[in-house]
Amino acid sequence: MLFTGSFLISFLSITTTGCLPCRSEMPTIQSIYDKMKTKPDLVFVLVSLDEDTTKAKIFIKKEGFNFPVYFINCYLPQIYDTETISSTFIISEEGTIAAKRVGIYDYNIKIFIQFLNAMNHTPVGELRYQQLFNCVVYSTAKNYLL
Image (tube, rainbow, N blue to C red; front, side, top):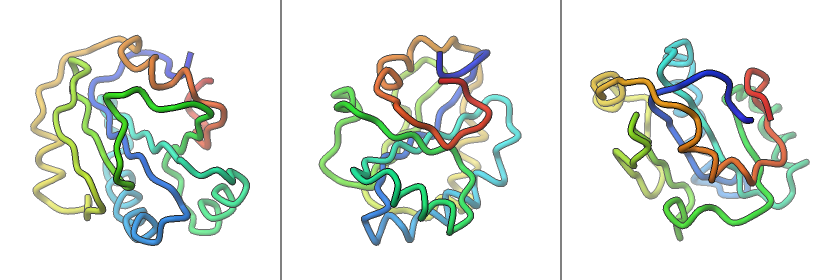
């Protein structure tokens, strides 16, 4: 089981540390994570497609990023498959994609924060996310269970 309890909205970013534009986006993700990580109804998930997980872990640590990063060993479910890295999905409380951003973006802006805060909040269980997380082989997250 990856997550304990229930959560409502997910910020899911598919990225790689080997991509220079992706690297430039990571500080904005860190900033919004720092602002919103205490919200009990929002979960941040960064899925790294790095083949060399050791290098990626070193980069993440060196840059001081503390958002949860997951490394996978299988293909992403088709709904999250994308030809462009970085891609970000906002998954609603119903488990549907409420928003999708292909390419890098500055997430630490007022309109995006307002969007996250304005989403309708109703509790959901964790099963909707199980398909994606069956692939997880390592996580930097200390507050989630694998």
